[in-house]
Amino acid sequence: MISEKDFIFNQNAALISEGGFEWSAPSNIALVKYWGKKANQIPANPSISFTLNHCKTITKLGFTKKHSDKLSVTNSRFSFDLLFEGKPKEDFKPKIQKFFERIEVYCPYLKNYHFIIDTQNTFPHSSGIASSASGMAALAMNIMSLEKELNPRMTDDFFYQKASFLARLGSGSACRSIKGDIVVWGNHKEINGSSDLFGVELPSEVHANFKNYQDTIILVDKGEKQVSSTVGHDLMQNHPFAVQRFSQAHQNLSAIKRILENGNLVEFIKIVESEALTLHAMMMTSMPYFILMKPNTLEIINKIWSFRNETHIPLCFTLDAGANVHVLYPENYKNETLQFIKDDLVGYCQNGQYICDEIGFGSQLILEN
Ligand code: DP6
Image 1 (cartoon, rainbow, N blue to C red):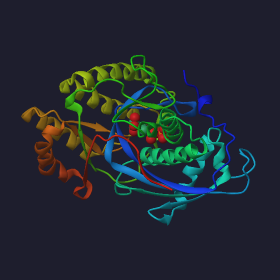
Image 2 (image 1 turned 120 degrees about the horizontal axis):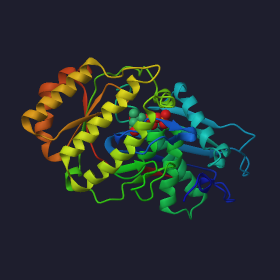
Image 3 (image 1 turned 90 degrees about the vertical axis):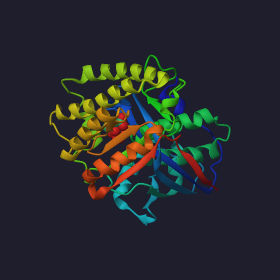
Image 4 (image 1 turned 180 degrees about the horizontal axis):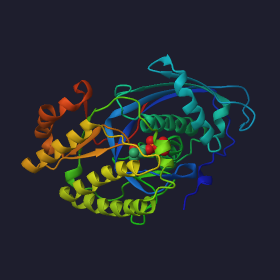
């Protein structure tokens, strides 16, 4: 079994002096949710997500060697400039600093370089769509491109596995934004190769019903979250329903694996909606407790249920740790569903905004020099 030690860089190659890369990495939407973690970003239960296609972070990483060729973990400091949409953004620096600290034992060469990190998102800033998954994934891809320069014999498998491993240390769900359309993170007995350390592509053959699955994100509330996911995860530690919840996630993952193989949309809807409501139920029953849904979130859910009852179109909803609603549906119901969203749901969005996305395939290299 692969362990953390396998990801420690220990080559003696000369360090290249300068260069740069640019990668995009997508957001993802969990079907079985990650909520609760142990030390070192180890998830309390396995999760599975659809990778998105259009909601992405695009990050350029420029690097220049500082002075010595000796790998220096302890003495020096991390040195980087951070730009958001081309302009310096001091507020983002502590997050990156913390990320570098968490990964430095695996990437000791980081302190030998000065970095310029220039990042932007394809979705509007403060849309309520979390950029931590796509952002950490895009940065991890760039760092792995640098590491590949230092160790050109690295295999592709290792490249993507370590990228997911590093992204996880930045933000748990980011490890599901590296590669593949449906990604599992966390040990699960029925999923070959699954690991708490990184995400893996679902190894099964997926039914045609789920090809190009659509996700339209209804932006209900663009405000700052009342509670960060990190705080929310911690509240699962002494949560009265934690044990039950973690075991339910294992069962739901077994069920959804079968459903993704056999294409049963009725069963898919049950698991996905139940997972979303369970996630919010966990928040409502932690101490302190909180409600991240807004009145319009509930209005939208009820509209979706009525529309589904009337038309038998197999659309469903899921939620992240926020008020926005993801409407999931098969590609062949796109016209009817978009018409329904325009007619019946747009009124509940802030400024009538929604984002049309669909399943994608992970991070992409844009530029290398
Ligand atoms: C509700 O990955 O944002 O979206 O590991 O603390 O960065 P950290 O948390 P994060 O948590 C995401 C939780 C979720 C469910 C999910 O994506 O599985």
